[in-house]
Amino acid sequence: MKAIYLVLILYLIKRKMAFTLNPQSLPIESKKLLVPGLPEVAEVIKKNLKTNFAEVSVEVVDCPDLTQQPFTLASPGLGGNTKIVELGGNPYLLPVVHKEKLYDLKDIAKLIKSDPAFIIGAGAGPNTYIGVNCEGIYNLLLSNGEVVNQQTRISKVDSNDDKAIQVTLPQNETRLALLGNLFVSEGKPGKVLKVYAKKRTGEDNFITSIRNAIVKEYKELVGIGGVFLLKEGKGKFHVMRDFSKTPIENEDQLNKWLKFYNMSAPLIGVGTLVNNDGGPLDLRVQHFHSFSHHGEAGHYHYDTTPEDAEYLGFFNLGEVLYRIDKPENTHGWGRD
Ligand SMILES: *[C@@H]1O[C@H](CO)[C@@H](O)[C@H](O)[C@H]1NC(C)=O
Ligand SMILES: *[C@@H]1O[C@H](CO)[C@@H](O)[C@H](O)[C@H]1NC(C)=O
Ligand SMILES: [Zn+2]
Image (cartoon, rainbow, N blue to C red; front, side, top):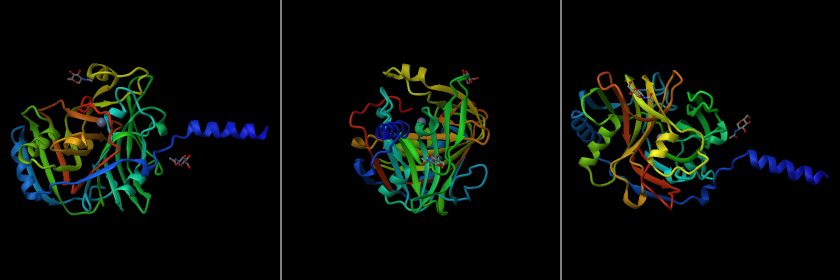
């Protein structure tokens, strides 16, 4: 009789607990990135941003303390052992979700030998924590394998009224599902790119314009990560609904499943961009998620108020790229 209870309890625990993948089982590739001098990259970005914004300034500065308002990052700077990390990918979400693709960022930090590891970026949030699929706006500092500062938000669609709800993760929740584009550093102060742009006059949004600058200039792989504030105006964002019961086969079905919002500044975006997909590395070329201090958070597409749009960002270059658990069967859609 006792044995039956034990089996039953173990079964219930197993159903409730979602296990993260064994890090030793994860395929991992790494590649040195091209690291041009920051002053050179500043000029390259300035030139291209000027074709899209009326007011532009790009400088190399000592990083301000990013733990302060409005940024409230988990560590003050973007310096020290900088890495661009892509985990999993969209093929684990579309057309059919691979729920077993669940990673622990503590394991990932160990795998890439980052300690301390200041991790910021865009990914799918831990559905195992909140009970439904969600966006993850990652922003945490790990040291010695422990969370020192947790500022990660998730955003989910309320099943009753379709409103987006932002939640701050508890200190001990370090799981990430399915896919992630992360900038990892030691979070140290140091030189960074300060990028300011106001009043959009062109087609390209802030991040696309920065990316296109390095697309035009560099053939070798260059990676940039950091944080930007949409200071004024509104933007188009999405939040993923809970996992679809039927496969999502194309962009049309995807856009019906995603819930789109006009979210209002100030919004703080974190993520990465690269100048190309790295060929066999199959990289997502840009990915930023934003959170706020007024309850809104989601996946950034672009601003929808060109007249009012105002941006302020701090970025650094990645020295090494890590591609972890790359999907074998890939496809290129749904990466906007
Ligand atoms: C975090 O701590 C809470 C409270 O102690 C616990 O219930 C939960 O299972 C922990 N979460 C993880 C991912 O370890
Ligand atoms: C956002 O605002 C624009 C302009 O007012 C409108 O056309 C669009 O439908 C809105 N989108 C959403 C998702 O509410
Ligand atoms: Zn996203």
